[in-house]
Image (cartoon, rainbow, N blue to C red; front, side, top):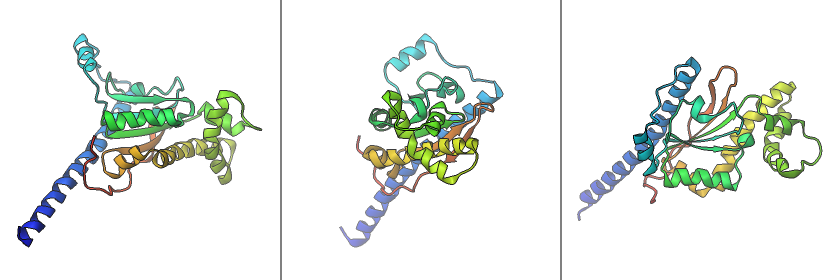
Length: 234
């Protein structure tokens, strides 16, 4: 094979690979748009008609392909399916008080991202989070199982306290820091998620849900540019 043909083949392979990567990135963007459009419907009180038919259930019984993963708080006011106006099979939800990520929650995210090929992950905190407020007020060493949640949130509270402000400002900042630190921890402790983000197969977004208005404040809407140009082998 002559040099020109080699160069052409290499360029062709790179172009195809790049197309696959940015195709995956586009899927993540489209999934985010769908969630935000659903949130707009929720705020307006005009929820879309959901398919809960026997046919839909039988279709989903064969398998699932949720377009988004949502890590959210267990708070009864923050149901992802409702606030994003989604239906059966649309979102893979991981919920725990304080929307913290322990190994089990991380494993759940990895399963949906790697095996179900969901192109979007949303880590969602919310206003007036009781778990964060309890951590902000905590004195002494937290005990029991609730103490495990407090310990996970405490680094975010310490960062917020360092910024100062009123108690309400510190709570709001703690909620935001908790979401951002959850993403940071996931990227550090999950090689699977880190690879999928770097290869462009998974988009990670962080946000805070406002209880009264119902809207979402995005804290970030993008990730580092893909560092690899080949598809991850599943």
